[in-house]
Amino acid sequence: MSKNKPTIVVFGCTGAVGTEVMLQLSTADCLARGVLRNPGRPYPVEIRKGQSNITYLSADLNSVEELKKACFGGDALFLLTATSPEQVEHEINIIDAAKQSGIKRIVKLSSPIVQLPAKVEVSQWHGKIDDYLSQNIAEYCCLRPHSFMQNWERNTFTIRYFGKIYGALGNAQRNYIDCRDVATVAVNCLLAHAELKERSVVLAGPQAISNVEMAAKLSRVTGREIEYVDISPEELYSQLINKAKLPKWLATHLVELDDLAISIPEPEQDTITNLILRRPRIMDEYLQENRRLFTRKPLWKLLF
Image (cartoon, rainbow, N blue to C red; front, side, top):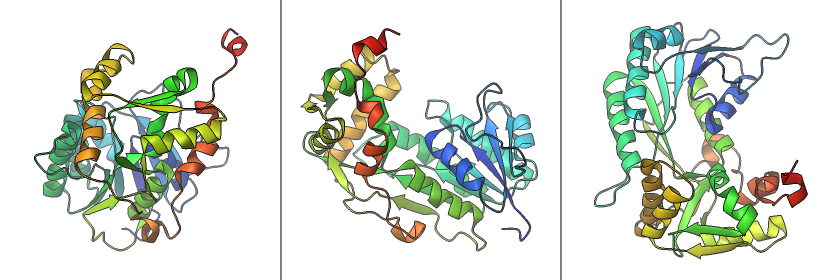
């Protein structure tokens, strides 16, 4: 990393992790450039009066020429785009643009490596991108969290209005990590003066939690009984498609994640304390801070 104030290019700056990356970079000794896909998108971190280290621009992820402009003069890049069937193409385009623009370091938010015969299609997408990254960028690191605490925000509707969590997890446990802690690891890698030695880092949160245990935690924080309803993978897929109206690839992904956790136990202890030099946030903290998301509003408030 250059001894001068580095320029960090942030793709995915409006996501849960990317927003926190921008927030942490805003107080660091660097220049942070957030890249928006939609020029009309609100800035994830507002530019305050007198603040000079945050900028934004927009770029089409299908245009390497626009991506090269976004990468111009950058020293390091945080790589994250929306999970979708286009993710492989988009992130490879970004890697190409970064390489052509002279960016030396890429920190990529990836996924755990899934060994056969287990299958998670989204992990296969990440594997293709990771392989391409390793072949084209000399200094890189792939961060591999299992699951984010913030993913529970997908379940707020059934929790708030029916008091139920639906899943196909059985009694298995998932390991959750707070997006803010993942962002801290990413920022430390982006700003490190020494060359990055670790090419792949598994990020595990402080504990593995079952859906039954999550129901108990949510019951405590909301003050009402929340129940976990275990259903078959087929039933879960049907609910996600027909009731939640999710695209087929995303419904498949969520079902595959439950199946994977049953087949391969997830870590029960954190792996990031030494990376962030403090204990990671625990689920109870996240739920307390965000209890409003899981608490049902009175009917009269919904009408106005």
